[in-house]
Length: 271
Ligand SMILES: NC(=O)c1ccc[n+]([C@@H]2O[C@H](COP(=O)([O-])OP(=O)(O)OC[C@H]3O[C@@H](n4cnc5c(N)ncnc54)[C@H](OP(=O)(O)O)[C@@H]3O)[C@@H](O)[C@H]2O)c1
Image 1 (cartoon, protein in one colour):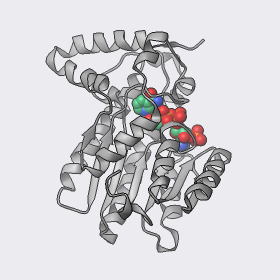
Image 2 (spheres, protein in one colour; image 1 turned 90 degrees about the vertical axis):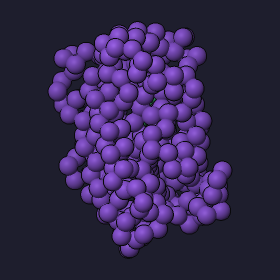
Image 3 (cartoon, protein in one colour; image 1 turned 135 degrees about the vertical axis):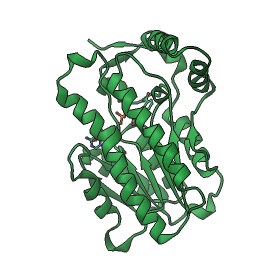
Image 4 (spheres, protein in one colour; image 1 turned 120 degrees about the horizontal axis):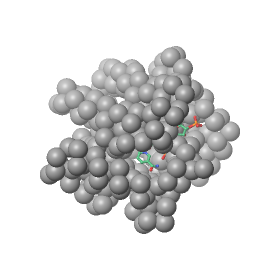
């Protein structure tokens, strides 16, 4: 891993670290010697991970129980992570959720939560931490975890693909504003990755979907390499890169048609 030695002693904040991609970010950053603030609602999961990582790698791991739907969530996380003048140099805005199905079948509160966790909270968290990073002037990195759904409107995933599209545009614009500063912003856009995400979003992976899934270990390993290399948008995996590139060559409505077909082959609605 590039810059292995230089990472010891840094402090990283990882949201959504109680499972899946976020827990894997915590694991891989800990192996680099990075101290951590891990955040989510399920404190028992965070505490178990903190114990595992601090005993294996000797890093300091602080657990922040926070609900990112709550308006005060991002401020609570920022105050916790920077208490006692501690400096944060890595932010992984990873927490996210989805509801798979038609827009009108869910209570509006579900869509509100998706908007809050996937778009509103990462915007405020980024605002607070980037100000903090610019003030302490150490080389710093922010990764926003979006999705390949950011590249293409996806039926039955209307709010989710909207929130991820927002996150990608926001990150790309901010990376431009921050060029030449000590803070690098990257948007990671994974495709299907084996995590609890499918269970939480009401999806079942089909046998053909399984063939295209990546492990969170690989997504995060490539994501950290891309972040250190200063990429602005990064899609891990050749098939995912193809899925993001091909729609640019065809009319938009056809892109949406093929995206819905591909999605329908990879997952079905859980009963
Ligand atoms: N898996 C995939 O196929 C895939 C593909 C593309 C992009 N992604 C993106 O990757 C990110 C991580 O997802 P994952 O696959 O690792 O799914 P996951 O295992 O379901 O993890 C989601 C994480 O978000 C946290 N979270 C959800 N609601 C929250 C809230 N209200 N407040 C605080 N934290 C909350 C969860 O923690 P608590 O429940 O403990 O709060 C959990 O740690 C998401 O942004 C997702 O959109 C996933």
